[in-house]
Length: 114
Image (cartoon, rainbow, N blue to C red; front, side):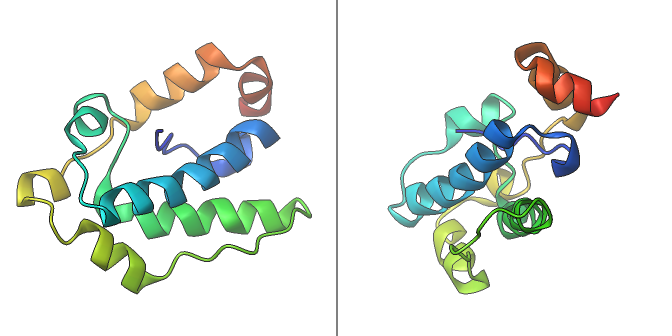
């Protein structure tokens, strides 16, 4: 699981829909109060913007004509991140490194960036 934290417009269908799904997976993972240290350490999770990223993915999905029937409520996110320590809550993803990683993995996303 990872938050790519790149502009959803450059994501291919696979990465856009996958990232959207992973926002729900992160919320579920954290609702069960499971550890997130590895995700934070590996530049894969920024807890405080989970809903924002989800909503950006959903907006882009709708703009491409995809169905979006899985909202993520603010209450769900607040509940999900409630157990995290302040240092975990304030962890930030390095957006530049994330973009580099995405385009190194996916030629379609790389083409959409151009």
